[in-house]
Length: 221
Image (cartoon, rainbow, N blue to C red; front, side, top):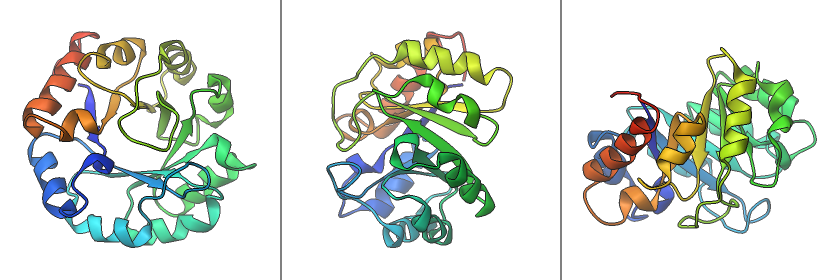
């Protein structure tokens, strides 16, 4: 089954608790939290206090995507705030292997993210340290951007993963129209912001994305 991780960057900032509970009730598998620092990316969003405030409302898995640099000094704060997984960008610092080790040592799952301009081979020597590889299908920094085709990169990473229990997550411009392209290439977790929170019901929006992703692969819910 294709997993759906709604990005609360597209939620109502005045009503996070209720909206987190609502998307989980509507079928979300994980809750995706986009952390931006106005340095590594051109936007400023959530810090550890916000993640700590979200924690009591998240009953599934809190999937925290760090778009910050440097990463390592912030790992203990996000662990204390209650993140289940931290995903760091391979481009955000000189020692991504050390960063992933530090995330694991802090008793969290570890993910590694790739910007559109970064090749798949950048994660080849990291796959035994991660639970997830995040392929960005937009340049990070803002929600609501148009999808960039990264299907060849996704397929390459899926081949490198082999039989390891590592997810491929895709983030950026995911809709029922783009979901089949990335799941066919090998993705199994889809981050969706605007496509979940803007228009329609959360349940219908999540179901439509999941159905489109599953149909392209033959996976069944």
